[in-house]
Image (cartoon, rainbow, N blue to C red):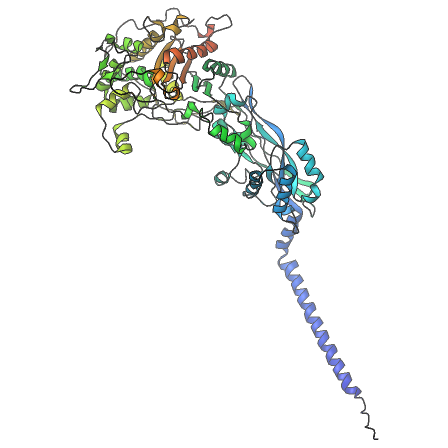
Length: 639
């Protein structure tokens, strides 16, 4: 057995290998160290500003402070809109944490509060709305004490969820001023595109209707800010800097709560509208649209069932009849028509028309009926107003023509918005040849002129327009826009574009129309003489009946054969005292049928509430000189 020799170890070669390995390892360490140093230099020197800003934002946040909304008062200081504390449930996405998801948190909230599927869906919609980083989004409003306690007990499994207190709008008078003041509601996606996102960053509500919407900029105020230091979980540790918000301006309205209540009681729960304004200042003293609704549920979000009940009601409580209701004005426009025809020179104070109970155009067999089918015989202008004689005004309208009629009636505010600060106002409709051609591609017919002359056919007006046109008769053409704001932050509103006054060839034409209106109420045979018989002052008024459905030639209107909601509307306009006008009232009672019998007593109750003292006599401030005439004494010549 042979033995192989054992080779000797080459220590020199092993030593070289170790040295190479050490050199390579050292080189790798040097390169890695250099790379690390270079990276640190890049992050800490070159990108210092960027990363220091990121680090600071993780610690310091700017939070908006919502301004308190301006309060709204009536002219006597009664609070109509205030701000009350309310608790809301908010969620901040950035504070939820990387290990948590938002949907399960919302599911937990829905389970705790026993929310329905629709209410659970609303949580997602509210959270999806646009917002700023680290801005808390309200997902539930008006939390009860029990709900707040549930959140507190389960806070450990609801990261990013907090209960926050805020001031929320409240309307202590509820439905009594809903259509004039309006209401605020949560900001929706469409409104987010139009508002200043910075100024509304801390606000969740905005004016939706009425005065709340028209004066939104003044009522809202200016947002404030807080720079706060937070911990890693987003909880505020301390306030570093604070810029206080600028509260919204308080708004004093021209409305009088006592007169508003009197108007509501006079209307007696019937569907309709009452407008009362001062013809000398344009101040709206009462605005009643019935039925009405409580605006408070709309502030934080009305339920689907409650809204559907209001929306689908046959009485339309959400509909603002004062501003948006377009009704045929009927005979209430006859005083304005009389002034227009006098000024145009187509009639004089002595012009008379024989009324057999109808009017016919030359060469036409169709009879345009007077409401008094037996006729009134020879009728003068004042008697035509007193008796509301249709035949006289058919003849007047035929002589005046639609072109001049449209021009004159537009000066009285028909077919246009008349108010200074009412957002939802409709223009109504004063037809013309051009309008009919554009709307129906048809010519204008002479018979349509006759119908328009008695406020029927295409003519449509809002109760506010009727009140303003009557105020122009009372003020003899002096134009002052009706308005609701008496002062905004202590300053009166300004009309930057006031309409031109109505200038007549002979100012005495106003007296002819006013005299006819006085006789409507106080002369024997006047359509509203029953109201005048018990009046403690002189009233100038005019009744009107607006057809809801047409009646064929030769037929008679029979109330018993017409469905209640198809019966005529009742209208009455008036101002008083007749010699020294202090208040104009326009009343429309839907399906009330008779302006003199139904609407006129409502007008008188409103006038009495404003003009009479506790002793039942006309207040001293409203009494006119003893020599003031009731009616025009001398005839007026044409221009």
